[in-house]
View 1 (cartoon, protein in one colour):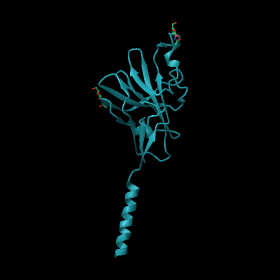
View 2 (cartoon, rainbow, N blue to C red):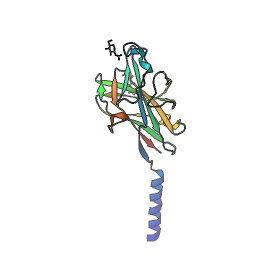
View 3 (cartoon, rainbow, N blue to C red):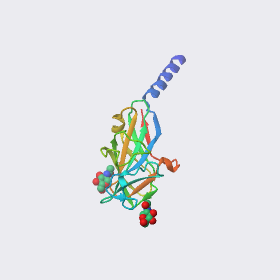
Length: 185
Ligand SMILES: *[C@@H]1O[C@H](CO)[C@@H](O)[C@H](O)[C@H]1NC(C)=O
Ligand SMILES: *[C@@H]1O[C@H](CO)[C@@H](O)[C@H](O)[C@H]1NC(C)=O
């Protein structure tokens, strides 16, 4: 009987292991700000949207009347098929008002952190989730549908704001508080 009881408890244990989801925290692999506005930079000589911003220490989202900057994030995904995935947004380093909205859109993976600009990156994206944030706090956006549709184990997301300027640490900041993805399988 005791042998049988321990067999049953082993069976229960195995069952729990199979049913429980595993979640890994994936740090962003590539990140950049991309300017899509029509403004000229460098003493009005060069379109701002032609300048690569991917190696700067800050990621900036901004939506003005003429200025427009989006954050672009690239993740390398595990081979496991995904059950849920949630974008972990760090606390901002700059905000222009008391609160801001963030919308994540899935976009193509054809970009390189060092060279991407509004001249080379297609602006197209499909919105997958959004959040409203008040203050300098971390937040999250469920982007499961983007992970489910990801190809070649890569995921690229635009992050936009509808309120003026919000900025976050980029990979180049050296700070550990950067964008991450909680990936459950
Ligand atoms: C812009 O023009 C000013 C005045 O001519 C000059 O001093 C400055 O170096 C220029 N800046 C750039 C980025 O070209
Ligand atoms: C964010 O706020 C706007 C304006 O109040 C509202 O329309 C929208 O539904 C909110 N979004 C979320 C995800 O709560």
